Amino acid sequence: MIERWDPSEAARLSNFLASLPVEDLALRLCSHGVREPAARLFHHLTVEHPRPTYIAEEEGRIVGVADLSVDKTVAEIGVIVSPQRRRRYVGSELLRHLASDAGRERIPMLVGYLLRENAPGLALLRSLGFKIAAFDGPTLEATLPL
Image (cartoon, rainbow, N blue to C red; front, top):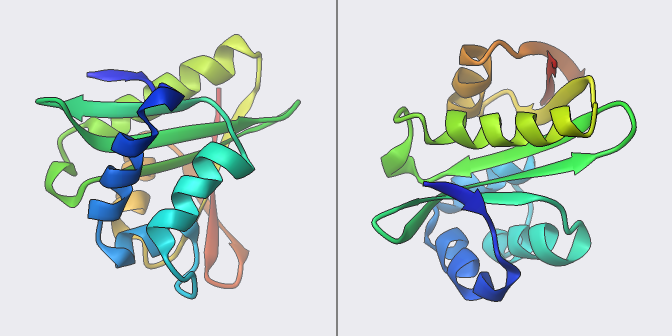
């Protein structure tokens, strides 16, 4: 089940992020040098850049999180899925919700940034038709016209 994250459930989101491998969090943050990456991502999602955030749940547990940052011409996406739930359409469904939000805002393009080594992220975005291009050093840019 995909639903908008309710800020009153901050502890659940924090616990989910803390349960993820440090390497996965580093890939989501596009940086390996972040100390306490779960706390950093939680802060990013809830304080620094509060934005539409969706959670994917199975059997009452969060298994994925996606967020959207909208400006006038693009909507920047971010997605992280539990390693045990990858390749089961969790990320795809989260991204469909983000694309729907961007479409309602009449944003013509989704964009995401990821490290070259982020094989799960690259596979997900390619499977959904995103175009992948070099961006800056080890970072790639993924774009999808809406």
